[in-house]
Length: 464
Image (cartoon, rainbow, N blue to C red; front, side, top):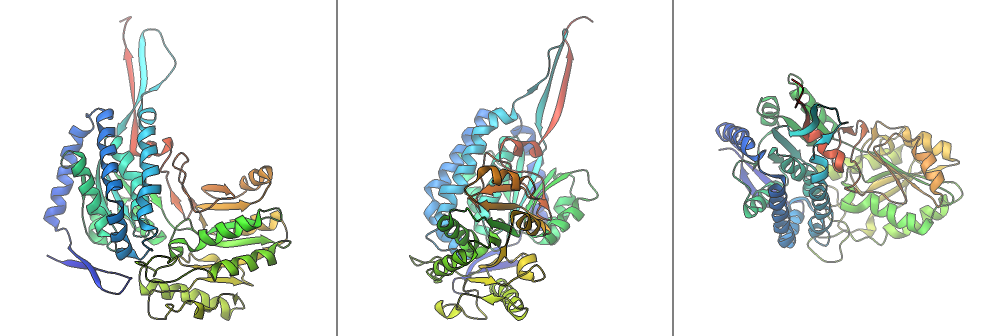
């Protein structure tokens, strides 16, 4: 069998080695999912809810161990990784469980004498989830839990950098008593992913990843009449108005740009600041960034660990160098972060000013701990610049005026609009993107719509 290795960004060691699923194993997974779904869709929703609640209990019980695994696999500091389970994962899972009964109930229509009529939400079949490494549990839970609750079977393929996450799901559902074949995972290559998408036993594909990956998923599905949900890239902007709560904005925008070493699809990647508060904002941001600690992510007190791999860090370094060569000023001295070394995944954070939209740092996804800051003179200029992007996942305004926030938000091309918040998913709200940030919707009651199909019941009950 062919194998692959997970090289830990922490120290360059081989942390995990796994075998790829064989063609025979993949065939068995697809067949088992198809067969199990016929049974699972008829299991009462209350029983499905109980099983998913038990699976969540497993995750919470093992959060510390899961967090340590995650740190070794992708480099986020261990002070944060267990909270991927305890906070975001738990919050999303609990809400989608809570929302299931209402979201999956029959939809009534007006009464008509002699007839019984309603719309039923029916499971699609088998949902294929392709999840990334940067937030492997947060991205996958958006689909895995509601797909199962809706009566689908699920096949999960996690990124090769985080294979233990898929295995943890399997352990959780086994502990919860989920019937065999209802949830399965596999480790496989991009070629086999494309083959699976083309297989008639896959009924929906949920993909989180790059824009190029999204195009590959679309191409693989092009010959079939199935839907795809795509959460892709981001270049998320923030606008700091003259009336912003400035210290609060500095603290939260720096965190929104640097948390997880900037490796977040909805992290802050562009900041526009009104000229009246620009100097004060920049001064505060520089002071705060210089307090961050870049270090071994297994140690306490570390804010920034390594990026996922050296090539990712070098990509960000290249954006920074290019911007500086084009006239930008880098405000953070990397020597204040001793672990920052070319040829390693350890990268110092960076703030850049005197930037413009001709620079890659302002128009190409960075996915790292570097952000450009631009001065603007009006709301209108900020709106134009925020919309000047191929992406539209989230955007935020920092202001004391909620009416202004609503007025500006109505003009921004984005999936989520924040006031005085960023880099957060509220599970009661639809998670969606526009432009190259993707298509479809997860979370909220609306998230169940993509995982079910409407089936109309039209019964003549008398008068024949």
